[in-house]
Image (cartoon, rainbow, N blue to C red; front, side, top):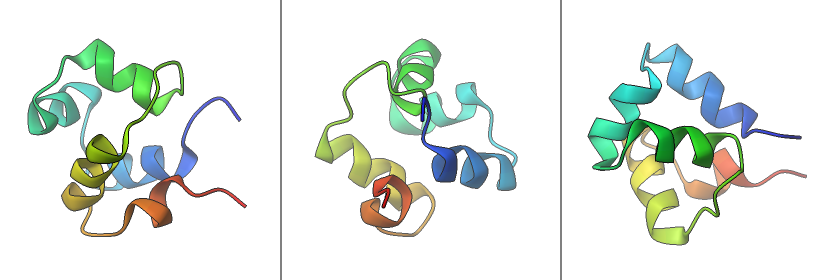
Length: 65
């Protein structure tokens, strides 16, 4: 899998663009795109910030069976 599918679905459900997420997280649009598409390492502190936006846990978004 080349992207976090749940993250993408949650983002789209809230009608948030890559740019919107980047602004909320205080990072560049490119940086966020790379996180969502797994081309940049996701650190726990960033996972927490992302989970907070969607009011859920990092495990819910990023843990894949």
